[in-house]
Length: 300
Ligand SMILES: NC(=O)c1ccc[n+]([C@@H]2O[C@H](COP(=O)([O-])OP(=O)(O)OC[C@H]3O[C@@H](n4cnc5c(N)ncnc54)[C@H](O)[C@@H]3O)[C@@H](O)[C@H]2O)c1
Image (cartoon, rainbow, N blue to C red; front, side, top):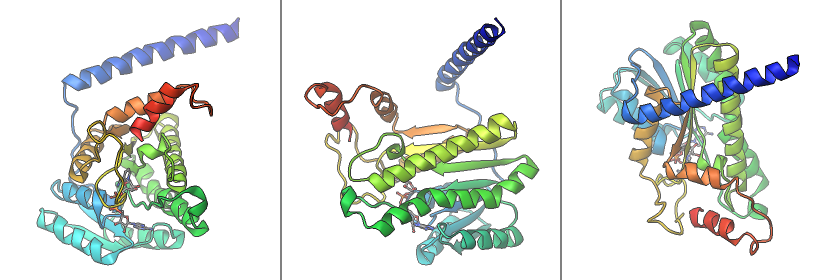
């Protein structure tokens, strides 16, 4: 009897929250969300030397926030630093860092704390890809994909979270990928590491936001293929349906999602559909399930 009451109670709370969040999401389509002021925040971006990282740095440079740029490529990172300063970023600090190296992350995190201060917005953006059939991927690239795309997030979060928790103020951003929600062929190491980064990010979000009720925010970003050079030569089967995304467009969406403290961001919206489609029955007998299989191949 007591058990039944609990189940009924939990179900009623679930349905109530479901309705509330559904109405909230509809309302936010009409009323724009309030954007937070990040002037005074210290924003660290990994992989700031090119692509999305560079665009995000340029966006944050206009906000009055202090920027800390990390990249394994010092030359391109210095170029981002120059561009960010040109856009009005007065306090921009660039460091050469291999995020996959735990000791290097911890050493540089200490240096940043001393030279700049406590990071309050951490954008885990650095990433690498190996686009090859599974058996052709060299072993070291499997390991490297995991070290850069997800294990590095453990080190950066361990390095910067304690100060955020102490101040009860902070924001963790994870640039995962739609390939971390719906896998695609010839990207096994990339997809697997992005699934892992999504899982890590979601688990931290639940741990900090729900369990300890802190004010630490999370944003998990899953974009479709972008024209940054990372997926050079990649084309989509029906580009009118799902064209490669422009980097500036994606960076703007991510920037807005961070300022609006949005938890999940899938870009473009069409990809929400792909996630739902994935739940459809998909057996090895392609002919039997031709329609669902064909729809998936249309997308990837
Ligand atoms: N390009 C896409 O189609 C696409 C799609 C979905 C998600 N993403 C993700 O977006 C993020 C940014 O990708 P991008 O498209 O801007 O790629 P990019 O190659 O232009 O930028 C990645 C940056 O990360 C840096 N980097 C690589 N390894 C590093 C390491 N060990 N330590 C520090 N820096 C390192 C590189 O030097 C580079 O500047 C990645 O996590 C990527 O997986 C990209």
